[in-house]
Length: 253
Ligand code: DGL
Image (cartoon, rainbow, N blue to C red; front, side, top):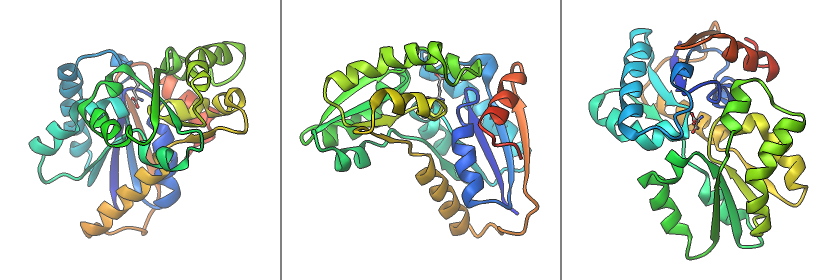
């Protein structure tokens, strides 16, 4: 049985966890929410690297065969450092799905919603550079999205107003594809899709990331598929936030 360690600044990584469970339904999952230090979005890379090191040690101590950095911001700030410092550990990270968006747009404008940390990360800037000759890339920080999800507010007037304030500028620029570049944002997808309307495609890279984790485990020859399925939830802060999203998103084990 494979043990997958997953972490995020909070509950957002559960949007990746639920895709992992679909492709790997008989493995062991250890999820770490760093909600005492959430949000990561405006923190320095150095701060996030320290947290990533601490959490990686925790997950490896629990027997993780692979670490899924289920956070775009932590991936941008820390995954190169983690790969360097833990060369024998496979890491899977998140990146805004610019490529599929660039292939899917008809207007030639794609919108990227992410945290400030992700949007200024060198990985994202490099990817953007590869595509911006062919498509226009409009960006916006999902201001207040992470806080909504952590508070368990996934719909209703407050969620609508918050989402609209960051999404409307992208729609006004003509984006017909919107990339969810933060793992918290898929929990607001129904609101995002309602505001964007049927002509706008919303892309969440989590299913592709889950398949990548499965591929890496297979490559390493980690035995899989024998079960039983199990999940452990850990939080550095109040554990209520995490179990709330578990229930709201109906991803109870
Ligand atoms: N879920 C995160 C991400 O994917 C982090 C959000 C935050 O803590 O600001 O970027």
